[in-house]
Image (cartoon, rainbow, N blue to C red; front, top):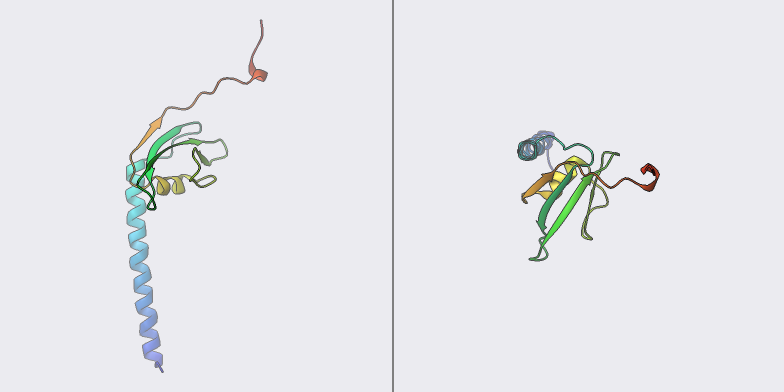
Length: 114
């Protein structure tokens, strides 16, 4: 049976491990922030390729930044909607391109007839 001192030392060891893991996570987030830059504005589109661990095929995705603040992706193997932080994680180390804001054709309600 562990003594009070041994239990305290074990708590310290676990806390130190947690601190090291948190530092590693912060370094990864800093690296992502530097790589991706600030979040593109609403209606911007990002195109990227992603390879999944379970297959060799690379899939091309497009993500659009919606007015509700979330990013929505094309494709079937994807999350429903993503925050900017989660999208950066989903893209990972894949190459990506950011297109200028998408300008959809106006809806019929917006068309003025002569």
